[in-house]
Length: 468
Image 1 (cartoon, rainbow, N blue to C red):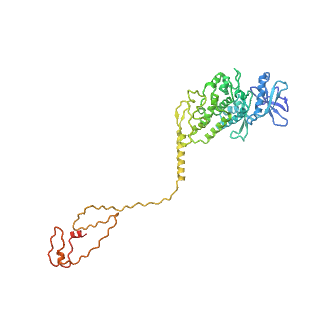
Image 2: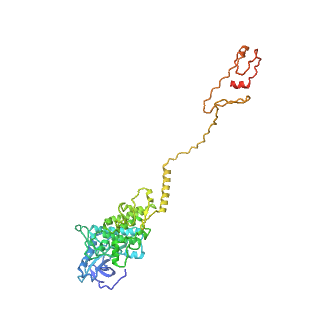
Image 3: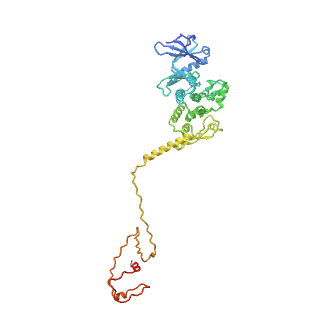
């Protein structure tokens, strides 16, 4: 930051460090860079002179040092020492010097962050605040200005480590107070843009107020703007208490539906409808991002069902109106369930992802063809010759009348067994007696008696037919 050399505290020696120049100014104090003769430079935060006369603010100032030192988390700034300036009434805190930029400066420069970077910042912040909540400490003033990004290449994919600053209005609570903090009536603590509905009403709060504030920050990181904006603080507080946030995907279509579901749940008006802890929120965010990374096209709308139960509506919605005019379907375990319908966030009209359905059908067809080709045994192909059917000869039941000059020989049926051909019977030479005694067919005249001339004349054609 730009060096400022007009402060009266410059040049003061506080223990082993010497104040050299001003790094910046906040709501409660001024931060100086201080040199150490042996160790690395430090940052020294000094309470504003006008606030040093208020013992309540002095106690709150030291409470910040106590809270950060008690937690001892890598995503929370380290505290080295505290004390009073030589005037004996102005407190100071010696802390680690951070090199980087605040999230507020990053958003001012880039306007909007990528979803993976925003999720990583939110997860690191949730990890720090989970440790704070385990030590019974509520931050109560979470905002982009209190999240500092320190360049650290090993912290992928962000390439930076988040440091949570300014526990100035942090509050300790114990189990006897039912894990809540009573706020003095008429007192509003926090930054209005990031205050939870219960903070806006001035009622008792718990760690879920920090969950709401982190949801506002996450919304702003992926959408480029917080969900509620108003010039007057009163209007802004009213919106926190009663207005529903616009679905993030209406601002940015690159936001996966699973991540959108997480954001909307953190912004529930009722604390019990939000995530129960910062650890649960961080796990849901990472799971949602992983689901969106490996999702099959057309089924990303079902990723939200791993976070919200089928029976539970989206939080922050009056019971009589439904879950922000949206419906979240139960999870499916088959590919066929990935082409279901999604309810439009504004009008409640079902819409279908036709492109996703077409891509899904193509993928399923390709996979089915590959599976069939790999599982069926490959048998050799044997050429099959056509079956030759024998000619069918139909034989009439009654004998066929043919001319006398034609001798008809009927071939045997192919299917029937061949009949033995009778041997021809030799005809002995007929004597007159035997010839005369031969029985003649009807209608034939008897031959004259007497010797039969030799050779015997050929039989008539009609008789040849009968012999056959």
